Length: 280
Ligand code: SAM
View (cartoon, protein in one colour):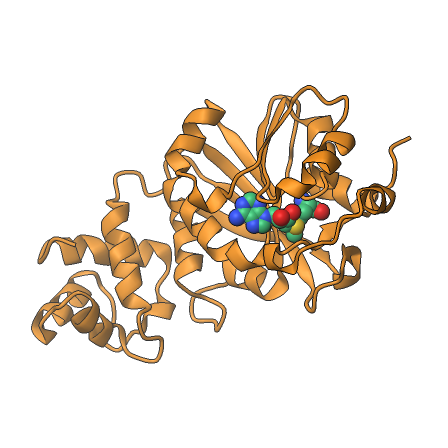
């Protein structure tokens, strides 16, 4: 039988670092459920971000063909060597994932892959944005995030949770909350509850769209939430009022609309009409 994580941590006299978002999971059933909900199977390559003491890594390694994990904290090396002893399909890279280039990770993994991670909360948004925008071989992302962040990922247009990150996700796929996880399940317990969100990438979604241009328009559209879209386009894209009104009319969007009422498809249409007037 596997040694419980709390004993391993105690043996290695490891004091967890808050600055690295080290809230670990120890419940074996919960860890197994996360791997299941992520849909990891024996043909999969999995990228885990933030392996910690390797509790989730172990569950992933039991199911996947190959697991590549990133861990910033080298102090965890001896712990991970113990937890992952006997698994020949796991490789841990002791580096800050934020300093890596996503295209290089794609190349290193060498084909399609899934991300499964109990993400350090302080880098959730930049990680999701970076992979959603730049990873070409990614097929899904199942990530533990704060519950309120989970709500933002799968929000509907015109709701208070809907924002630029929701649109970024919807441009490539869709997100849904697959598991709620109360704070007591973590060691140490954080101040908020969490949830596992699964983002599935839909190959070919908005194929042919100039996503770089769409992202510029989304950034402008959400630059000031309280302002009408027309004003955000004037400020963000340096349009005259007449140009801003023309692009909205041509895209079939109300002149009184606000950015947060637009779906990803609306933003794609709007960016086409913007590009007819100006290079973005
Ligand atoms: N996967 C483990 C679990 O589920 O119990 C640990 C999850 S813990 C929330 C996040 C982990 O990410 C920590 O081990 C932390 O050291 C690591 N981490 C934090 N920032 C990182 C970064 N920039 N790059 C790689 N790992 C990072």
